[in-house]
Figure 1 (cartoon, rainbow, N blue to C red):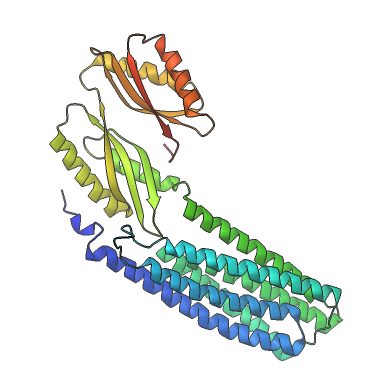
Figure 2 (figure 1 turned 45 degrees about the vertical axis):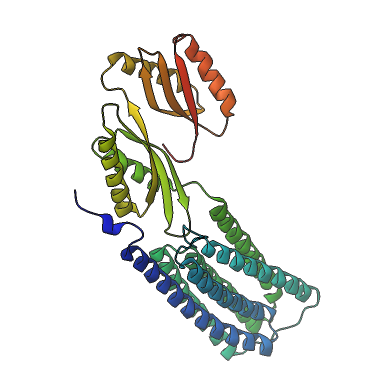
Length: 386
């Protein structure tokens, strides 16, 4: 088998990839900072001269985007720090903390904008736009579209939630700026001022965006369900290995963007030696990392009967009994010693039933066909798609 040990974490290639990712995030964020600072300055000037609350709030929104980019850089720098004794799995989750701070800033900006817009509705002040101000706003719309597409593309490229969110936010800002431009044109042509109401609408969208960012980041910190496509790919890759009949109980723990550690159980013949199992585990670790970037930190072993036809029949019967319940998702790790009258297996349970209740039901239903057997059942949580 091809030697893939150089691809494993802890080697130079792994950390070089992290450094390259960090450079992309910093470079893209710096471009965002410079662009947003210039846009904020121009819009603030237009808003001050024209006495426009909508343009001024749009400028504040650009300024918060610049601050968000600064925090993104800090988060990327912290997350790229090498593992140490206190943090042996690295500092990747620091990027989630920076994303939470960004979300808080966005939410604060939205609430502030809401309050100011309500004040302008209660005490309206007629804005005075010029052709120059309209041109500046129009240019800002075009710049935001280009910036948004670029930042989002880079975010997808390096798997950075912060950059992807910033790119999408920039595209949304372009829509906001376009609405301000339309209001300014209406004001100049018909003399109808809608900007306070537009400012209110902008603030509501900003608040919504802030809450959504917080929700996404909280899910990352708490730990969300693994991507079904990824788990299926990993299990399929493992099960395709010679000598492995199946992969189960896959748990993927995320320690920052692109930093995934996992554990899994594999099912192998009961005739396999410890040395053969050891070789399989080592090859699986190499292959899974090479194909997915996931580091297998632990591989448990189930054995299955290979020389007992009665055991196969018992397994089929037990599976039919257990899986008749909709809360029983899968039976695996099944092994039976017909001479010693010993049976053991795992059952994956849905979140809709208590483990104690499910196990009691299964034991009661198996006692009748197998009264002489000692039955050991391990309940598993529905952690990933089977």
